Length: 206
Image (cartoon, rainbow, N blue to C red; front, side):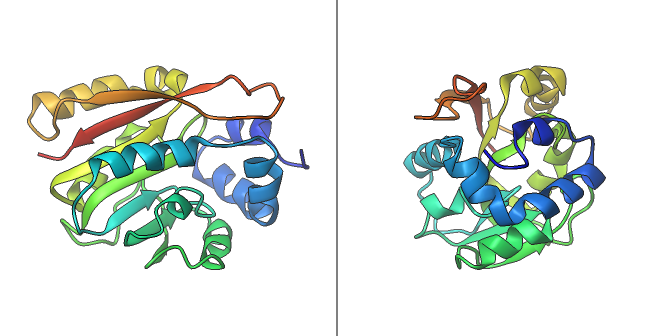
C-alpha cells in the first residue's frame, strides 16, 4: 500500500512530525492511502454535512490535506487549512478551495472573527494529530449559528479530552448540545483497519 501508511500517521507526535510526514506523503496520499485503503470517511462526513447545512456562507475545512472532503462538496465555497503546504499543493491541482491556508490550528489563526458559517473536518482529530484545544480558536473565526461537522476516532475522543472540552463549552453557552453519527471509515479493502469506525461530532456555535 505504499511506503507510508497509517502506522506512520498514527505514530506522529505533534506538528513537526506532521509536517515531515505529510511533506513526504503528499504525492502518493490519494492513491497510496485514499484509494488503497478504501478511505470513505470524507464522503460520509460530507453526506452528513450536506443534509444539515443550508446556509450560503463560506465553509472552513480543517486539516484539508489533498482535499478529499471538499471533493464531495463541489458546489460550496470552501477554504482549506492544513499544516502541510505540500498536501495543500495537491489540493490546489484540483481547484477545490477558494483559499488554501498553510497554518497550525493549535495556534492563533490569522483570520478575522466570524468569517465562516461552518467547519468540517475528516482525518484530523485522530491519533497523534490535533486535539480539542483548537476548538476555541475555530469558534472565534465562525459566525453565531455556525455548524461544526467533524470526524473523530472514538479512542481519540476519549483519550484527548474532546468530551470534557465540548462539555465545558456547552455548559458555558458557547456551543449547542452535541450530536453524533457513527460512520465507517473504510470500505471494500482488506487491511488491519478495515473495520474501524469513526464518530462524527455535530454542534453549532451559539
